[in-house]
Length: 635
Image (cartoon, rainbow, N blue to C red; front, side, top):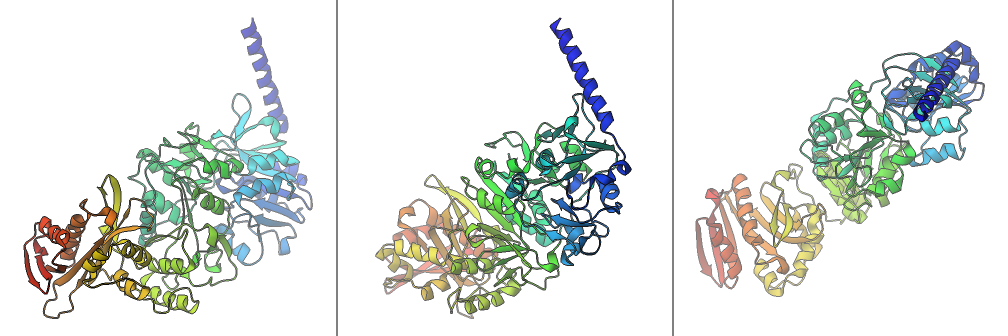
């Protein structure tokens, strides 16, 4: 009997919501007067923009007067931008996207620089009082719930606070799990109209952007949870993650690029600390491919912005990595958006919050990525000072972490302005490095005698490798100009005997003037490898090995070798490995012989050469062995 009563009750509820649904169905012409002069209207944007209602209720509604239109990520353009001075309607957007760039550049629309984490407060505390919400929903299910589909974003908050809610019910809107279910009783007016969702396909990639993506991928470890912006560079980063494992997604935005990664088993969300097994986002920006993927997919949850951008939820993850772009970054570490040349993408949204918070999670990183130049190659995007006043500083000096270009990456966190300036110059385009160095000297950011490797010296990342010594993972990589302090620290950790063995004279200090030549490899005539702990930071140097072409015209294929190993890391094989590896690199660079000058008591170094197993000849004079090694047979 109880089952029968339950069924009757359910049937009655179904009848009631269906009757309510039918009562609320209207045509656009019937409700054009709902939006009154002076109203504030929130329009769901991104790929969920209700294009039909925008056309009928806004663009073709000639009775509008001084209406403010609030949008989040507008992907379409509004035909006349509301008339002169917005006397019909004035667009106020939290983000500037390409189709709106001319409106903002010409002063026909307003940008509101509010971060995503602040948008809910903006509405909930009535900094902006929304009168009307216009949105797009899927058809109702058997219980009368419709879905916001691919854009939950700020819409759920807006409709809960608005006086009037108008919905375009579109059969093409996917149903998604999470916060996006809206019951019929939450909507005041329903207009049924099917049309394709607005699409935003992935942009074509150029070689430089793809290389930026590869450099970003080098910073992302298996099991990391990532946040991604949208545009060329974030998509290039996703493309480069194809060989990673168990990547998780907690992001304001997801795009088509995640579909391939899910198919390859890269994105599993298996190691997330919050929402394990779930991709969490607030909106999809892409094409039918991502729309079909999220439709009725329990492994994807579309959440409101106050969930995805809540710092506590970001902090709940380990190894959280935020990946965002910038238009320019200055030599102090500030990044900006909003130059007139690049006004197509402009706004803070979740960028600053994710960047600042991700780097506070255990193992987390905030990554700002950009091409080293403008697309035409005429302008450096690493600059001494910002080149346009119409900018929005997104990442402050205090919040900067990793910066990535096609020429590598640098970690600016904890660095002085001098160290930051020098580091950023090393990943600038080579043709702008000399100019940047001179500007840095003018601004008194770097030493007056600071030098750089020549423009032709491109950091050879192919020589980066890692090994395990003494039970610990260490990283071996080519030296950088920014390693000066690390080499100094290594020198001061050495015993007096070790210092004598390295320089064949008593040396008690290694000032900037002496240390700078040791880190100024040009990767053609000179090279050095440094050994660091197995993390991505450039901190403590455990060992360094150098070689440089001997200054003898008659022996062009001969280079000279020298090395230092920290006392705590000696006698475990690092020296032998370094020599063997650097000999192979020297051979690859065209050298056939390597020489070294060894004090007669330095038995450890002599044994290193012997263990390498390469043909060797040595002579002794005045307590010094001259060792000549045939590296032409090196593996």
